[in-house]
Image (cartoon, rainbow, N blue to C red):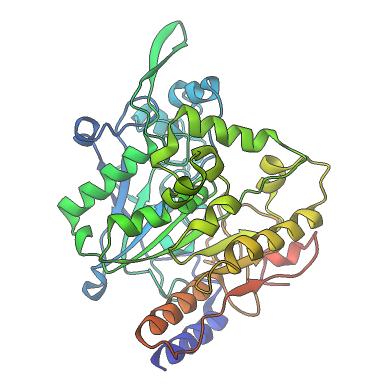
Length: 422
């Protein structure tokens, strides 16, 4: 029953401290640029530059074999023109290149913060601490009881295809009257990163891994959950996709078609869930979370808003009512995630925001996060209790089952749902 005591202590702490600290301690990470892996693995961003990672090594020796991975999000490129823009347009190429010129033009760059090989997660563009990086990347135990002192890895998103591509062929395009290459190598970037971390930072000894990502990185989490478990078989992997449950909807057939273009052009057959691929024989049929989730063996914790504006912007037309979208999210998560496995869980909010709902109390110009609670629980405490219960059950099958669903049931609009209310 030790896990019960741990959860109760954590829950009590959450009630008192879930608003977090607006002036948290430094949360520093070091850059890893996978230069050698360009040749050894064919790992490249869209423009051919190396994949960038950010590493924070465990601050508690007890947890040196525990790892948190986060896939940075940033939408997709759904045509050669949009992929070219991601790769070479200075106003957009931070999500298609690791070059300094692209970093310096990032729209999410914190004012006055210059690039350094050691940076605070709060200052890394498109991470911006808890706003896009989520609560499990934070290092404050009061607001992140599970992973605050683990090893942490942040993937900079630079392939445009949710880290799924493995296209050997180089595609050439014309931009500013120049013939330039495009590389679709997201899956190779992931494989190269894991191999590098095994060889240099002890990832091969990992005992526990939490895999997450936001938005397009959340979608990547669905695709890669079982891959991480298979690649690191001595570890126990838990998948926590954030704001990546993008639906298919009859009102917008162009959305699944966009994912189909990505899967085909980028050759995502290695980068999507392999059990789904074996069943369907078609990578394009393994892109949507509702299609992939029933095939995922890794325990899955869906973190998503029912009224995520990205759902209407990406998956449906503006004519579709938010409450209708919210009902479909609940029904689809229930059918394709919760009914599939007793190990799966979900934290479904009614906050009308995309990502950043981990209640870290972050005060950061333009990048505050949102204080979402459900029945007094914040998402990090829910994840913590879910992981603890599954671990206890693996050691003692008679242990109490994990709570599997937290849901804010308020109808849209619910402005207070982003600020501690229901």
